Length: 199
Image 1 (tube, rainbow, N blue to C red):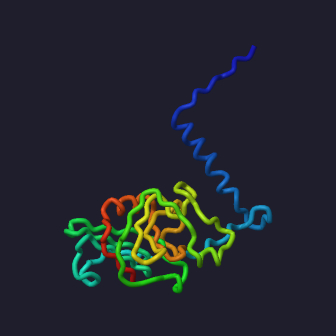
Image 2 (cartoon, rainbow, N blue to C red):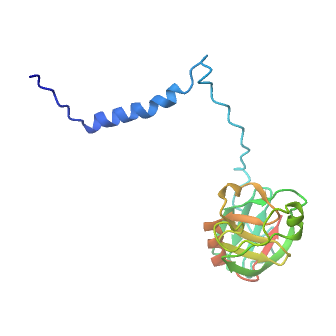
């Protein structure tokens, strides 16, 4: 009768083995000359906008911060918020309209606040996309996300989005989009009457 030796594994041995196992497929993926394991495709270059995403002062844009002030910079794709007493300043990444013709610039204000907004396409959206539904109730499929600040310009809003890939991009039909957690915070601070400037 032959006695088998039982090996007890140590934590160090386990970690070393697990690391080797995890690393093996990555190393084996690309083998020069092997048509079944080609070199990875180069990733497309991504245009970063880090230099434009910086804190700003309110004075060049507003004569005062009465009722609070929101500045949307469509070039740097950032939304700036100053509270009425200027004790709070917030800077949020945003999505902006897809094209120049969909982009509206100038002064407006918040006229309505809605938590759990519903959505209907505008007549021009429906003309461009007749397959779109006429109405989407509040919820995860709603393109306005969890909160919306309605502006005095018809059809324009600052709102959340459930599609986080849109933030930092030209991706909207005219509105300004924020991450849901950011619009929830802004929603809690902005008032009906908050000044808004899009540049």
